[in-house]
Image 1: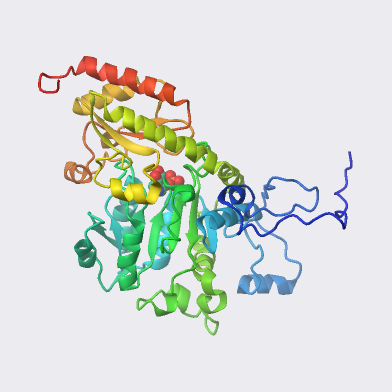
Image 2 (image 1 turned 120 degrees about the horizontal axis):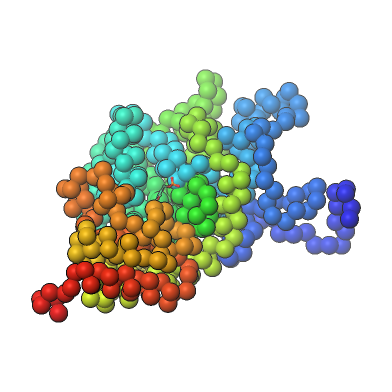
Length: 456
Ligand SMILES: Cc1ncc(COP(=O)(O)O)c(C=O)c1O
């Protein structure tokens, strides 16, 4: 075995593909963003555990710090391993670039704070991940960044009332949890365009396999990479994807970090970088300043997880549909919040956007209220009692006493978080094993809360 790097390839051999953009989704999830490792020909992304990178010269250091050369400086804003995950997810979402960060929360923070400053506002749909709602209401409020909620995203009058002259962004999710109350992204984009406001979409639960909000006209996509993208519940990460499709200069609202001189006497980031302006502003500005850098080890796990995204999603979705249908006809079940089911108020949106497979995170409400939910959750044996979603493993959680514990009863009621409601994240196990586990847990509920005469 040679200890020296491989010799140069034979001149007759074809070059590998370097630009994967024209290839299919499954091909891009495996290859997009990869680069040749010249020393040994390693075929998976090397993990570059290097905090900083050597400059070839005095002059190169200045050009990199000045932004004329976009090469590596320091892993808080760019690392070669992280770059593979960034180019891969940008390709799948059809964005102009992406930035990986330490968590989904960090991605949302950087994306919103990049556009909305102290004394300004943004509008969000009300049904969003509970941690995001807490971030907006607690930490953003302390920064002077305020949110206005739209409770019914299908009600244009509500949007019009919420959007004011200081509204600098719209935030929403493709498939919110736990209620699975899917959002019609093209409809939100139409409203945003009327006002010239950029739309940020959290696409964590749909993933780019099911939904590509940038193709629907949204401008920024964020992800918790912790979930379906990494896929195996091993590492926390987040991603911001720049759609490169917002006209920052002519929006009619000010985005000074992008359009004003980057430093005294220098051009703006928009003038220098055009369609990549938001990405480079966030990378060199907000993300670099706040510092939620992703470890290259976690970036490796993220890009490797993405390689099997479509395969896992197919199983997640098929299992979720089977579980939702099964639960919906069970006598111990009061309600199933799955927009893929006919009869759900948002079934039309789920059909149009997702062919009826509205993700694999949804809620079931069991008989017996809080006590019924406790019996149900404590009886599960295959499905794990835990927070997190989008893992290959199936998981169950009681939102009212965990993720939504700090919410007032009034807010929980308004969000539809009933006492008997349990969130399910359906994994890729054998579906019969999941149905069997749910059935035995529901039998325990029935034993404890027998059907009344009216129920029969
Ligand atoms: C839809 C959604 N967005 C963002 C987050 C936050 O991601 P992270 O836990 O990676 O910070 C979560 C976490 O559950 C989520 O479900």
